[in-house]
Amino acid sequence: MYGVAAANYLAYAALRGDAIDNLPGVPGLGEKTAAALLDAAGSMQAVWADIEHDEGRNVAEALDSWSLDQGGRRLGARVVKHLAAPGARERYDFNVAMMRGHDDLDLGLTPDVPGTPGLLPLDIDRVSRVVGFLNVQATTDLAVRVLTGTPASAATRWA
Image (cartoon, rainbow, N blue to C red; front, side):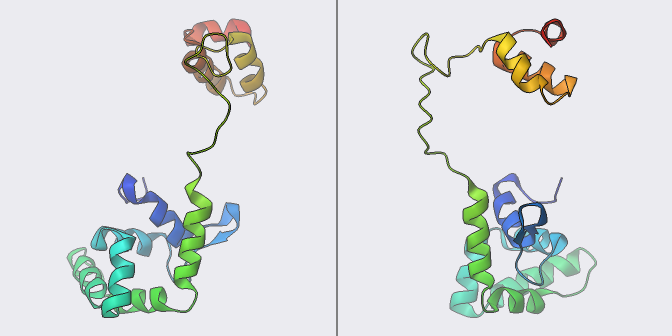
C-alpha cells in the first residue's frame, strides 16, 4: 500500500512522520522519498552506517541509480544532506521509539489456564457490548467471529 516492504514499514513511518500523532518526520523527507530510500538502500541501519562511515556516498549512489531506473531525477545527494543534518538521526530514533510499541508487557492474562482472564473464546455478549459501542456492524461482526468463535450471522442477534 505504501510501496515499502512490511519489514521496513516502521522505518518508513519514522522517516515520513505521522501528523495524526504529532510526530514530525525527518525534515526534507516525505512519503515518496522515504519509500524510495528504503527500496534503494534496503534498511535504515545500512543508511545510517554509510552516512557515519562514508558520508553517505553509497546511499547517494544507490538512490541515484534507483531513481534513474524509475525514470526520475537524481536525489541521492539531497537525501543524504537531509539525513546528515543536525537532529535528523535523533528525530528518526525518537519516532521509531514512539511508533514501535511494546511486546513485553505483562497484561496478567493466562489463556492457558481455564477460567482465567484472556481465555478464548470470549463471552459473546461482552464482546458484542464492548465492540458494538462503536456502532459499526461489520467491526462488531468481525470481533464476535474472531474472539468468540461464533459465526458473524449470530453476532446480529447479540448486538
